[in-house]
Length: 56
Image (tube, rainbow, N blue to C red):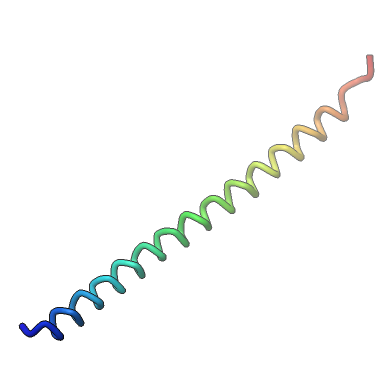
Protein backbone atom coordinates (compact mmCIF):
# COMPACT_ATOMS: atom_id res chain seq x y z
CA UNK A 1 0.00 0.00 0.00
CA UNK A 2 1.10 3.50 -0.68
CA UNK A 3 1.29 6.13 1.99
CA UNK A 4 -1.77 7.88 0.55
CA UNK A 5 -3.77 4.63 0.54
CA UNK A 6 -2.71 3.86 4.10
CA UNK A 7 -3.72 7.38 5.11
CA UNK A 8 -7.18 6.90 3.56
CA UNK A 9 -7.57 3.57 5.35
CA UNK A 10 -6.54 5.17 8.66
CA UNK A 11 -8.99 8.03 8.14
CA UNK A 12 -11.79 5.63 7.23
CA UNK A 13 -11.08 3.49 10.29
CA UNK A 14 -11.03 6.57 12.50
CA UNK A 15 -14.32 7.80 11.08
CA UNK A 16 -15.93 4.39 11.59
CA UNK A 17 -14.62 4.22 15.14
CA UNK A 18 -15.91 7.71 15.95
CA UNK A 19 -19.28 6.93 14.40
CA UNK A 20 -19.57 3.77 16.52
CA UNK A 21 -18.62 5.70 19.64
CA UNK A 22 -21.14 8.43 18.80
CA UNK A 23 -23.85 5.79 18.44
CA UNK A 24 -22.95 4.31 21.83
CA UNK A 25 -22.98 7.76 23.44
CA UNK A 26 -26.32 8.59 21.85
CA UNK A 27 -27.75 5.36 23.23
CA UNK A 28 -26.39 6.15 26.69
CA UNK A 29 -27.84 9.67 26.57
CA UNK A 30 -31.25 8.20 25.73
CA UNK A 31 -30.92 5.76 28.66
CA UNK A 32 -29.97 8.58 31.03
CA UNK A 33 -32.88 10.72 29.83
CA UNK A 34 -35.25 7.84 30.53
CA UNK A 35 -33.73 7.37 33.98
CA UNK A 36 -34.33 11.07 34.67
CA UNK A 37 -37.96 10.72 33.57
CA UNK A 38 -38.35 7.71 35.86
CA UNK A 39 -36.71 9.57 38.75
CA UNK A 40 -38.95 12.58 38.19
CA UNK A 41 -42.03 10.33 38.29
CA UNK A 42 -40.86 8.69 41.53
CA UNK A 43 -40.15 12.09 43.09
CA UNK A 44 -43.59 13.35 42.10
CA UNK A 45 -45.24 10.25 43.59
CA UNK A 46 -43.25 10.63 46.80
CA UNK A 47 -44.09 14.31 47.02
CA UNK A 48 -47.77 13.55 46.56
CA UNK A 49 -47.60 10.85 49.25
CA UNK A 50 -45.91 13.26 51.66
CA UNK A 51 -48.57 15.90 51.03
CA UNK A 52 -51.26 13.37 51.89
CA UNK A 53 -49.76 12.62 55.31
CA UNK A 54 -51.80 14.03 58.16
CA UNK A 55 -50.42 17.18 59.71
CA UNK A 56 -48.97 16.86 63.20
